[in-house]
Structure formats: C-alpha cells, structure tokens
Image (cartoon, rainbow, N blue to C red; front, side, top):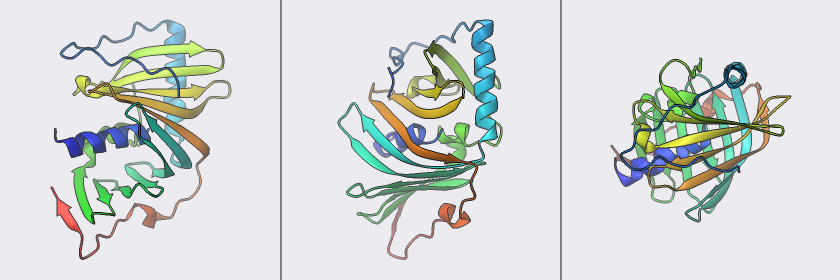
Length: 218
C-alpha cells in the first residue's frame, strides 16, 4: 500500500463510521476475536440496530492524532456509500464519495486521487445495512463503562491494517467519537461536535466535479 493510500484510508476510517485507544496487534500476529458475554452481545446488537437507523449525518469534527496532527472540519454522510469531508484551512483536503468512487482532493496541489469505495475501510460504515456478525468485521474488544460503550473492530480481510474503536454514550445510545489505530501504531481520535442525524442533505454535496486543470493520479 502506498503512503498516499495509507493516509487516505486512515482519514476515511477515522472519519466515517477521545477514549483509551485499543492496542494495535503485534506485527504479524492475527488478532483474537473478543469473548463476548450474553450481555455484551445484547449491547452489540443494540449498537448495530442504532447504526442502521442512521441514514444521514452532518457534524463538525475535531481530529487529533498521536503523530501531532490537529484539524477540524465538516462531515456529511448519506447511506449507502455517500460521504463528504471538508477540512478547515490551512489543511487543503476534501474527500468526496458518490457511492461508488471516492475522490481525495488536495486543493493546494490541484491533485485528485480516486479509489474504489468498496476497497476502503469506509465502505463498512457506509453500507445501507451494517452487520457485525456478517463476517466483514471482527469484534476484538467490547468495553462497558459508566454511561459509555466502546466497540473495537478490525476488517476481516485485512486484519493487520489497524482497528477502529467506536465510542457511544449509553441510555440513550448515541455515537460520540471514535479512535483509529493504524498498522504503524498512529492513533487518531475523532470527536463529533453537534451531530445531526436524519436530516435532508443536498445531493450535490456528494457530486464532485473535477476542474479542468486538476492533476489526476491513479
């Protein structure tokens, strides 16, 4: 995987779908699925149903990584498959998915890179129906704290690329933030600020038109 692809996948995974991050598995070591109790399984099912009720979302986001990166921006997504991430200046990045293809735009360089959405981690959380028991994702940890639930997942077909921990407030259940640990051990924490779920979104948010002078990379 190229450095650009690693960066893009981390950004997408971090922002699609801060707490104590789950440790990344040792290099070359296959992660072990969590041993869930009946109560854990009931809560995981509750989380699954909650995520499947979300069809659209818009929010401000705050992103902080252990590598020293700090950024803010606006996030929009509409299931299935549509997403837009707008970073505030000075970060010149825009990410747009139209449901099939994902465009990573560096506005400063006027450079656009395209990816097949299905090949990215983002596809999991942008599916119309999310299932943690379908085999695409492996649950490696589930933690329950006072008013907080933490669910850690890895992608089954690429388990050593890293993990994502989704953090929810409990009763009422609500998605608040998530943490991504990549294959290099870089931890990225993302917090949602004022998220709004279920509202109508302009379809043009997910329709990227490439400028004539843009440089396209594979």
